[in-house]
Length: 190
Image 1 (tube, rainbow, N blue to C red):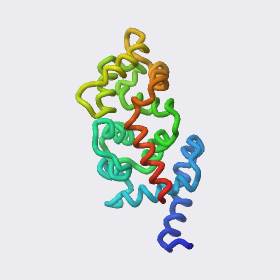
Image 2 (image 1 turned 180 degrees about the horizontal axis):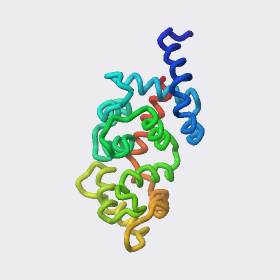
Image 3 (image 1 turned 120 degrees about the vertical axis):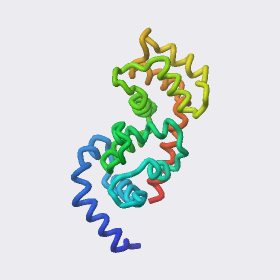
Image 4 (image 1 turned 30 degrees about the vertical axis):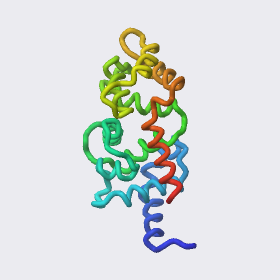
């Protein structure tokens, strides 16, 4: 089973032009060359207007996500909060954070989404918003909220304590686990 000329050309372009741009990312995240190429092929297939960026709609379609407040914030992380379209290196950074199966990595990812002021502390209001957005409900799950409140230090919850709380109740991360599964399925399909 061979590959078509266009697939061959795409691989050459990837090896010569793209891989040098993301080689440090690949090393840090332990992303293999084949995985990186699969992501590139997926990215270029979803980049319908072929401008080298991924729109919010293209992002949701690719990861088979329905649009929620959390998924929109995930997309904003790709663009560093600018609402601009995401480049391939930005996309790889986000995917690498989502790709791992450890709750600590997912906790780190979701914490960064909600720590908008970058003060390394989430307030009760930010935790409430986080829980409502993760579950896509109007009310935060009181059991999860009570659980996370056990990790507050008076002012808020720092990242380390937040991750400890998630490790004890990983079901809080249902939406991110769904994204992980979808991502792994997509990578296996290619």
